[in-house]
Image (cartoon, rainbow, N blue to C red; front, side, top):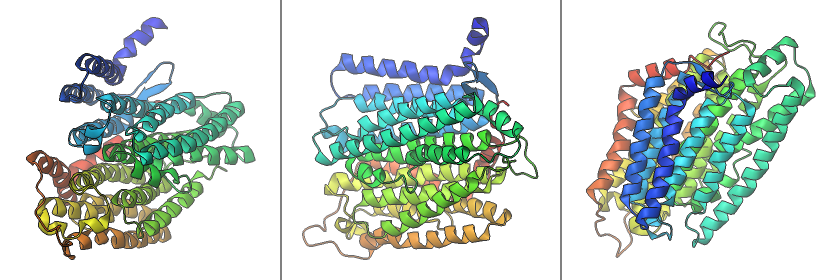
Length: 497
């Protein structure tokens, strides 16, 4: 068995590179003993090397460590997403006033890498124990990052609330997994699917309870209602780069493990029938996802209307966005999964862009209050116009990547004859315009207060970063064929049966 394991260890190279990079960054921090861009540079270099190995693996199918994890295009898609988002957030941190004023030196760099490593493992996990351990690696790192600026009262409060909610949801999920293990005798989700399929129609009330409890664990990670209560406070209290990282990378990691779990554990076969998944008779997990999705969209959008803090507004926006993304899972076919992948890529650029623009504004105004952004469109036109692009993309306005994501989500629902659910999603998109356009109104349709009408200048580096988010947001809204093809190819595989 040992030679076989060693022969497959090359498939673990992306994760191995991240582990080595993590150790190198810790040593560099100890040696330098001061805040330095060198540590961030080493981290970005390590991420790029890891991304190269992920690229080499794309299209492969293999299992590792006695089928604890798998290598497949599905996992590779999410790994590309994690690498890209981690690199962007590391660049965020360079110009973050909150990180610059913090007592810590470079700890955030290897905490970001640690979270990315956990996300990698979540995307590849096919064993419930590995799913739980990798989720805990992401969660524990997130708790530390949320309380990174420990002198800020809100930051400490955010970390405490995050830990309480995280511990509760993780405990509920691992207990449910233990029940499922007791019922089937295996932790491997493919073996679990075989055993459940062999029983014919699954009518045990325990399975329904297990479904709900495991959904609680995943729902906490993706900030879906009713497991969202930590989100607004944690987003508001954490440094903006951390908030952006949690909103994109941590949420995407939650979706990666949630999709694989539901689309494997409770299917009769990995083969599609008329393009749809064959769900085991008696297991109605799609109904549970529908409830979570609709609740997340409604509560996220309607509560966001009343927010005055940009951080809290984006927090409730993220809750609503998770509802839109879950609509693709409800469809339970390849078209829905493809739509989810397209939306996740669009979400990466438009959400990180919105957070970065918020960080630039907060650095200058010392506030993320929307009312303090009066007349900012005239004081800082480039940043304000970029923010408009991100707000319109998040609401799903045509010619943006956000529109393409929602178009494919709603198209998949309509093809599945779920017109009523598509209508609910569309109606919520209309509601979201109220709070997204509110930001535009304050920036361009209101005059600044007296004494606050001077020009706001930013460095060229900030403008370049905004372009890195704004250009793809518009580009994929106009030319989205490569993105769709990549999503379709990645959505066709779920690892080894």
